[in-house]
Amino acid sequence: MQFVYNVVALISWFFLKSVALFNSKIRLFVQGRKNVIPDLKNTISASDQIIWVHVASLGEFEQGLPIMEKLRAEFPTYKILVSFFSPSGYEIKKNTPVADFTTYLPIDTAKNASLFLEFARPQLAIFIKYEIWPNYLKELGKRQIPTILVSAIFKKNQIYFRGYGGFMRNALKTFSHIFLQDKSSARLLESIGIKNTTIGGDTRIDRVSEILERDNRLSFMEQFKKDRLCFVAGSTWPEDEAVLIDYINNAPKNLKYVLAPHKIENGKILGLTGAISKKTVRYSKLDENTIADYEVLIIDHIGLLTKIYSYADIAYVGGGFATGLHNTLEPAVFGIPVIIGPNYRGFKEAEDLVAQKGILPINDSFQFSELMKKLLDNDGLRAKAGAINASYIAKNKGASIQIIEFIRKLL
Image 1 (cartoon, rainbow, N blue to C red):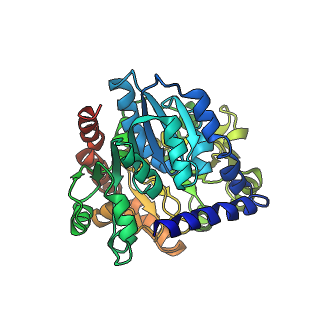
Image 2 (cartoon, rainbow, N blue to C red):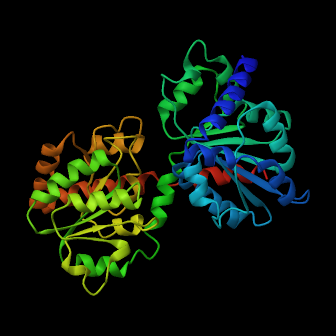
Image 3 (cartoon, rainbow, N blue to C red):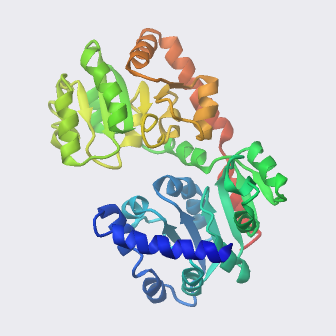
């Protein structure tokens, strides 16, 4: 089976290089991997003590961030190497101060895994959530490098629990320890003979908990909101925006709106601005002296959304009508109700909070309009939903502390 896997990996790499000629994102994926091994060889010395953290993309980076920050504080003599699978994560975080070295992860072939580890020389490897790469894991095992998987969550329909999933089950069994988000994942792993697990929760909850401790003030938001209620929609896609714009254009003028689209290309922002009939301004064009005159603020800049959520009375998180739900914990930590689209299955925190009625799903424009009316007319309902969200986060933090305690025994 490993032979077949390696052949598929090589064919996939050849295919991606062909597609890269016509697709800019795939081009980044391919070109970013060209110099990984030479760069490692030139930047990591034999005397460096390395902790390697591998993430898929931006969401997993945020999941791993509380661990990396604690590693930096507790093990200052170690250097942190962060590898990304996705260009969208790497391009945004390639200069992150939490890492000493940031790179792409070469495609999972036996040769790449051997070369990567030869020059990275990690004393510890940490994989975040879903990243299970058999050749890398096999090579880590051969070199007796402790390897842990954190914030993992498993479902019974995954290949590991199928009759034909032996190859991937063996990859899972190479982990020194697996930190899980929930009990059902532990039961699933136990059913295939994996017992070296700890149920520790989601490190993203630690990450968002830390948000409350920092200064979240934004002068432009204070000027924009004033004493009005504020609705903030973050990481929206066109499918979300179709629902939101219909409401914004027809709703009474007693609410301020902030829209932070997932993609901020100029053409898309112009299209969004043109579709809104209320007085609208882009962040890149705002004047704080006149911003209070506008009803809708469109954020065409990366890195502001988390702080903007602190000004929201109601939040909407995008992706539930499109490619996949974005981070609902970031607004929830501020103790406000969160609205999402209908496709939230597989996101544990969303499933939990929908059941508790802190996160509120909608299926269409009509449901959204009705829900907004209820929330705006009933201060108690808003407060109750928000309190549910804040309480959930407060009760479930601490996953990264458990992981660091385990790592102390390894280093």
